[in-house]
Amino acid sequence: MRTRCLALLILPASCLLLELPARAEPVPIDPLLVLEELSSAYAKEPIQELVQVAAMAPASSRRDTFRVRFAGESCFELKFGGILVWTEQTQAGLVLRAVHERDAQACFERAVDPRTVLEELSRELPPLPAPQLVLALRAGDAFGEPIPYARAVKWRSASLDTDATPARASLIGVGEGCSVEMICSLEPPRLISAAFEFENGGARIVIDVRPDPAPSAGNLGVPVEHRLRVGSIRELAPRMGDIAVGEPFPPMSLLRASDVLEDSAPSGEPASVEPAGPCLVVFFRQWDDDAIAAVRLAERIAPQIGSPAIHRVAVLNLGAMTAGLLDTLAALRERMGAHPFLFSVSDASTINRFATPDIGAVVVAVRDDGSVAAVARMDDRFHRRPDETDEQFRSRIDGLTDQAAREAIESFRADP
Image 1: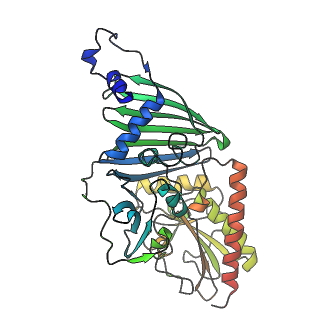
Image 2: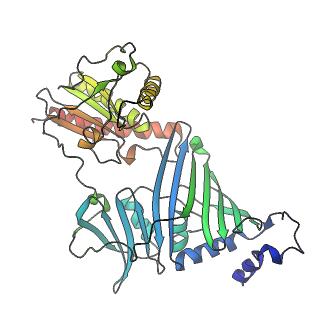
Image 3: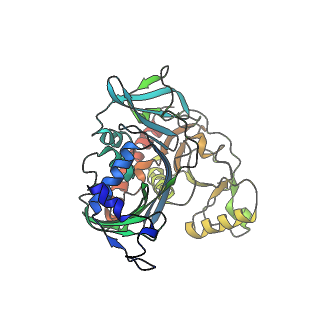
């Protein structure tokens, strides 16, 4: 009956000319009716979408993109970064599988209950804001917790815009310390966007969804018959670069920012552009939370190992000396203040020697004999969570930094 009522609300405009003015006012509708339609579509229909997520806070922002496919019977596929995750129906029931595009030998595999598959994923991966996945699986409180951090959402209202093509509905909800606006089409039922505002910390998450133009690969996932099974999705990550602890710190082609900008060198700028031990080298892809956390970590380590030089290396990954490079260096100089820094235009010969491309910053401790003593990577643990206040974020990062510093100091002091 609900589906029939919804269908009546989204009749073509030609059928509504007698009842509606040229520009129709939004029509109030039941938000739960819209959510039921969305849930049914994602649970039953073959759908392939591209999802863009922007997480914004007063002092930082982060953007990610992932792909999601639905194939009915609790079967879905997610692709983000280098990870491919999917579910598959077998004779024994639903199975969750995952592989890494840079690890052709291993596979994660676990039998799961459709109602708890998202819980399994949350134990293995960072929280994934995918409302359509929650709706498709009807996992937990599907309507009340559309994404992690947005809890106990009560949908207050919904309105239908019949002038839009296709017709679309806007839903308004309020949860514990957050508010949400979700926009979806109704012909066919699809999520278009969702915006979440969080009171603590002033964070905001915006999700934009569009059909994935990439051709479908047919079956979900990839063949895994001959792969080695591992116990965790995190074990699928390839080796963190080709330089391991104990190996020589490689020569690198680095430049001083002051030489290119032709300005006066900040105090403390190293005389050599080739870091030589003992020293600490901070590689960063951009001056963000990861980079700041890495510099603080290096500053915490340095006094405990004889206060060696700290080299800050911006990895810009620009192909040539262009006006764009000069602008980038000038902007970095302004943001970093008096801190001297080196730079490189190649990630392959610098930061990627110690980390995978998804890692934003790395601290490398180098002994006086030139060997790598420790490598600390700013992984997703160092990223701000949407529901954290400034004080909570600083407190958690301080704890993580203390732990990473202790590990690096112990490794540095150990016999090579």
